[in-house]
Length: 494
Image (cartoon, rainbow, N blue to C red; front, side, top):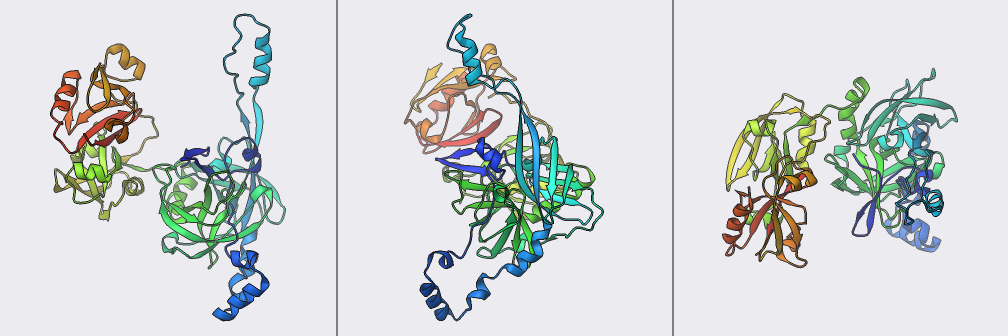
């Protein structure tokens, strides 16, 4: 689900919860839940006593998590994995020819040979025979996986199944003893403000118990097409990845996965994968080792206020279709670029991120009814969902003249198409964007291929010039562009 390296956002990183070793070498970061009752930590005994007398609630009744901790700690395991990292090549040497300094450069700025890396994470037992749930990034590409139980027993584990899109992995150890098993709860029933516990191995410290509350649900953090995280104010530290997030009934409601941080340390914003999402893919992981998902064959994006106004929508909602795969389920159902999907199989689509999760959960070959908005009218179509193939789609095509929008565009030639990796030598590409122009403010970038302007196809430079001439009096101009391997709508204010 989540590529567990740093993702910079306005100076802030989203980091995966991995190991202390990984942290030291600049890889991901782990998960642990910080103490919730900060008053009991920072206030003086007199302040705490005054607070107790005002609420008439005994301190022990609020703070004592020991019965749950005692019951649940035996179900949580320490996972260590070993993998071989490829060597790092030195950047080009500034010394030319056969200069002897080149050897010095290679030695000190490159690592010619592979190296062994070790990661620490957490997991929890879900079956007495030795099945364990954890994060995929804890065991991904591991050559050896070791599991240490709460009682000190150590076993070598094998991967039964993994799903990178949701960052879930199922591993198994062979043991003759019946292991204590975690009870899986219902994450849909979680309420914001509800107390939760986490147990894991931060910094390799076995069976560490921490507490927090549910800060938000259904949080999209750009981790992938199916991210819908539980947010918690619990502290997140290296080594907690794959450990359980537990409600006060002792049920696992999530798998601790990532943090939001400016420095790599905990600031009270952590994320856990909902256990209901895990339960949906678990049978397939166990039986097939991978997950089969539904596929609609469309690329979507959010409806921004500017796009909503440009399209004449009453409000921003739904998922805007920016691309339809040729001969895919969406095209066969009649979906078109520019359609806004507002309901899928009886479920409202409020944000674009709602749709991929619903489609992924749909069994291939199932027929679903889709409600969409097209040219300000409601339309219903029926689509037969296909199976998502784990393949990389090749980029499609997508313009020298400078206009009032702040764009310099160029006709795509065969040579330019080859350089850009385009399949067809037709259309126009943006050669430059003037800083501070309306195009710059709208988010257009150099290298974007212009596919449409105000829903009119742009096949050549002549189409582009005509379209630009027609938009001078428009309040909003809607561009459809291809950027790398995806397409998107962008609204400009001339």
